[in-house]
Length: 304
Image 1: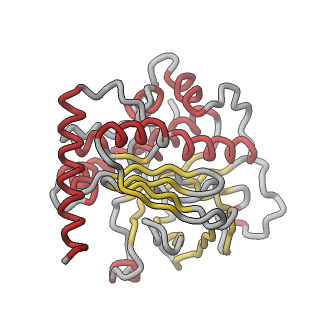
Image 2: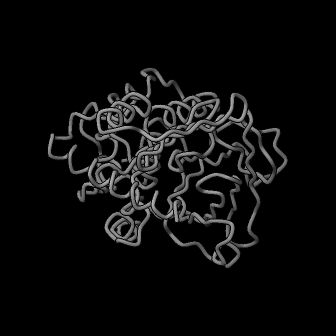
Image 3: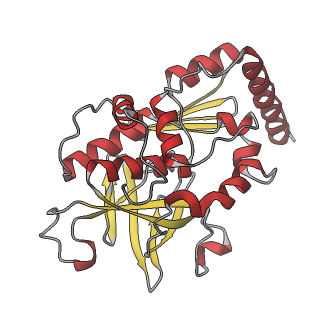
């Protein structure tokens, strides 16, 4: 059984998951293969909280998440990185799970020791890769994250430095004795800290309590606000409430408010690739009512 997964998946789960990614023959572990898998994942499996908004948050068992992705759903970091880690395990990559935390640059906790535990981060080692790297602690190792929504399109080498992917800039630095710090200024996750040591063989199990808080507490952003995000080589699509935006530093950013439920669901399916066959008419009405109400409250604060 691959490390970090709770059980062997049902027959065909990984094959169906790979079909969702458009990669049916992933081949042996390689740097090129890893990059292709992450690109496909952030492009095709959205960061979204539909079920949390409907009050029925799915669990974070990696097998369950893999089945949901194969069926056209998305999720947030514990789902996205949890299932992706299990897939990479299955394909022969050396995956390490890390306890992490996402911060705004203004948060005092960002400069404090330790991490909040509200993020599952991954590092992946590709055997035989990166032999020319001088940093012995990161030979052939990469920071891999499909769970940030507007994070990197491709893995970042796990060594200190500044990295560019198209018009976007990312930074990695060591935190002495504790782990790593990822920076992406201006994004929804501008700072991510994660511990160097592995999260443990239980995989996502150690994140269950935090998942319950994030998916049920009225203080959680996932509960308060609907969100869907996806990344491609050129930019980021985001739907927050009724506001659809496109971040594209080269062609220019755009933003507009969706008119009604028909357009909302057409965008969710067409732009973000989130299948809607699990939503009943009652679900659709309830979700739109919640989204529209939250949007009106948000718009009122902007008018004041």
